[in-house]
Amino acid sequence: MQRSLSSRSAFDWDDVRLFLALYRSRTVAAAGQRLGVDASTVSRRLTGLEESLAATLFQRGRSGITPTLAADDLLPVAEQIEEAMGRFASAAQGLEREVTGLVRVTCPPDAAEVVLVPLLPELIERHPSLRIELAPSEALADLTRREADIALRVVRPERGELIVTRLFTLKWTLAAAPELARSLGTLRSWTDAPWISWGEGRGHVPAARWRTQHVARDPSVCSDSLRLQIALATAGAGVVLVPEPSLDHFGLVPVRLGAALREEAAAWPSDDVFLVTHQMLREVPRVKAVWQHLVEHLGDHGASRQRSKSSK
Image (cartoon, rainbow, N blue to C red; front, side, top):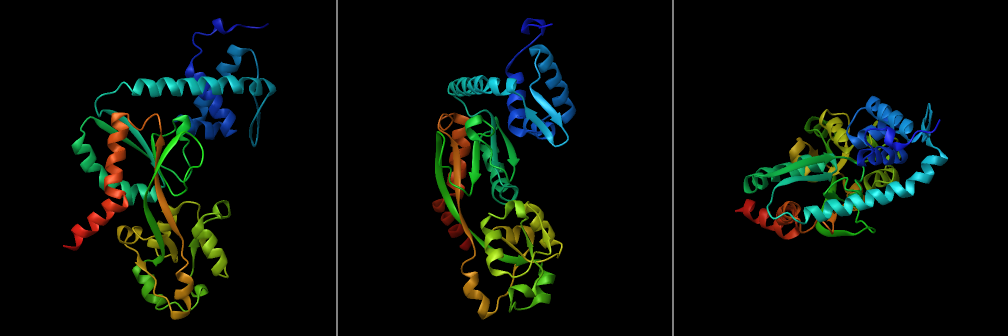
């Protein structure tokens, strides 16, 4: 027998978020990660939602979940609700006058540790009512869906109502733990050292592409997490291409190269680093404060000023 929505005590935005997370993730566990809850909670809430709708939204299987025709029919409406909620939240935030509240910042894990963390004490001291949530992830958060307020990215976004500013150019270099670097001496061939690199799933990363083009051997260890690659290098597992700022921070040293390799090393990857936010958030005081602080300290002008200070 059909049951109406009124038989359920609540049907709200959280139900829509649950539905969208499941539809986009296609596994209960991944949806839970998006929502910040465990898989059993997602499964229980999904059962309750389907019972209230008297409809099956997802077919469960060993490899994940598959949307049903009912879910496909609901998706456009759910996305309209999501968009409307985003506009409502942005409009409400536009009413703010003080630098207070939460700002969610996403960036790669190594950048969070090396670049962002040293800047936060001054920012928090300047704005005591400000709260920062760091979301280190190799995946790109969707700013249009409010998965983060500000992002540091090495790929310039081409779509969406986003504001983007270039901060600086990040150069990469070949590094190793000091003991391994000493034992290798001057590297005469790329194959004379064990390599740490990206897995097949991240073969498009510039550092992975360079290694594939120049090193005629598989990596000794691979990981899709640069932070884990750095940990492996620190433990002496091999040499690794890393952003230059990571060297001193993690106690790594450059690998010495013979003359035959230095020309190829000139083609090591470099990344432009961009600061990104949604255009509706740019003038919100709390977001604006974080944005300006990062531009001041990480932008080319700010970085040059910092280098000038340190050289005196």
